Image 1 (cartoon, rainbow, N blue to C red):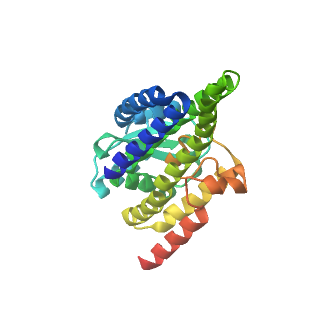
Image 2: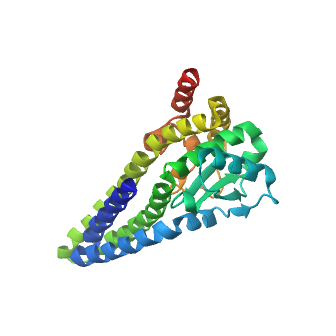
Image 3: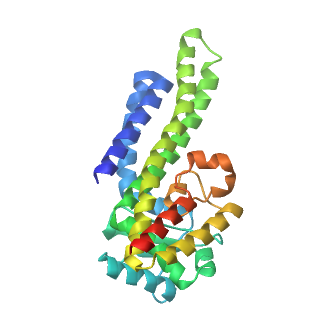
Length: 281
């Protein structure tokens, strides 16, 4: 919870900075009020927004018994409440968890994941997501997704203001330059925040999955397959604002420069850590 509060405060300060750059003190106050509203919204409704974005469909033990039973078994083993279970109508295999706490959690897997992986590999992936739920990572990821989308929106606003103000009086050009500065710094700030949130927690979730299933090799095999697909295929509705939520970055195949701003550690490093953990276990 402390990490989530720190994230919300940092994002609020970023909003205030860009508001000041765009429209001075008045803009900073408007940005402050917007950030307060978004903190409230992201805490209670960010999970629903992300699930809706990916057109996720809730399933039950009757409609999708294999997936539901795996999640139920993992929840019982981990001592967690049963989360809601969703399927995303997407053929590229991937998965994520969302929600504000273990009592209000959801696990979503793509249709491609269920078709591509074995039952043991699926269990390894879902154990990773249940580990995120147990460590309260899901709220941080959902909040970051909402604010990243809002940051993108503010960048577009600052672009418009910078272009408009560059054509009017000299005393307003400084504000235009401030808008350009905000336009440059905002995406960088969003990327840094998402990277700091996601890279460490992915290692921890991998470790949690290994201990939950007692079979690190299940997740290792799944990660190898998911990474191969991500290198060659892109999810239809994937966005940079929500990429950090998935077990494998949907944009892994963008080229060598994508690794610089990746929200995930490399799959090679994750496999190496799991291999070491397997030996220790």
